[in-house]
Amino acid sequence: MSDRQLRIGLPKGSLQNSTIELFQKAGFSVTVDERAYSPDLGDDELWSVLLRAQELPEYIAHGVLDCGLTGYDWIVERDVDLVEVSDLIYAKGGMRPYHWVLAVHENSQIESWKDLQGKRIATELVGVTRRFLEKHGVEAEVEFSWGATEAKCPDLVDAVVEGTETGSTLRANNLRIIDTLFSSCTKFVANKKAWADPWKRKKIESISLLLNAALEAENKVVLKMNVQKSDLDEVVNCLPALKKPTISPLANNGEGWVAVETVVDVKQVKDLIPALKAAGAQGIIEYGLNKVVM
Image 1 (spheres, rainbow, N blue to C red):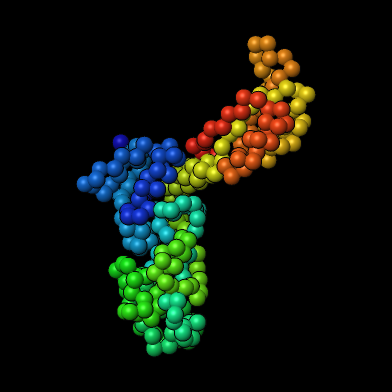
Image 2 (cartoon, rainbow, N blue to C red):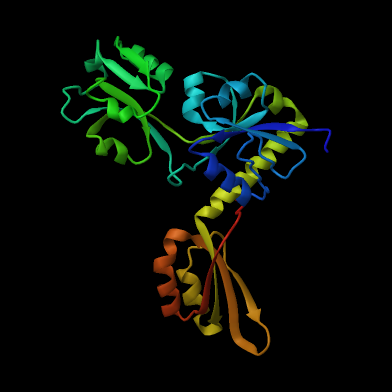
């Protein structure tokens, strides 16, 4: 057991599974006991706890935890001062930011914040919403929503401030967006005392590097192929490589042929493989990555 230990908070709930998968891809051997709230990350220098993302900013800011992963939205809501180590762009539905929006029923006469004077708004971000109302010089009733926020408008409230990835749930409940407050993503954050400690800072930065490398790898694959030297220039010209491709001679009677290996974006592959084949590449292999360190 190490005599040094970093206390890290992980988000429980909708982000729990994707966070655990991210740590596993980053190289941590995560073990979660369904009856406990302290996952084993396979590192004696780490002690972790699963808590709601809404709670984590204050536990970190007050020094109960050294660092953790939480949403930018909850940092803004709790209005705490933290060191933002890195952005981790992932969410329960995919790798995209999360948007907090002001929405009303599609038949509502409300078109702007000014129209909310004297109205009722439901949201989880009570503090943020009140600050936006104050900014626009509007007085309205803001109530905390325990869930199913979209379903409360228009029968129970006049408007909602709600988080959305794609807007599909809002549209399904006949709501329209009239303003976007801000975009949010998961952030790896630390308290200032932990960040000032050289050992803890180095440990936090190492974790950040590995998590970001795992996320970078989500969008990239390796393409490997055999190419005749006479076709090499044409094949290389097809490649939008992360860096210049690796080119090496083939062994065992491979005279006149080379192996070409490169890293490309996943979204390019469906158009790239036919182009490479047409340029003369053979034996094309595609495989995924665990980490890409930029």
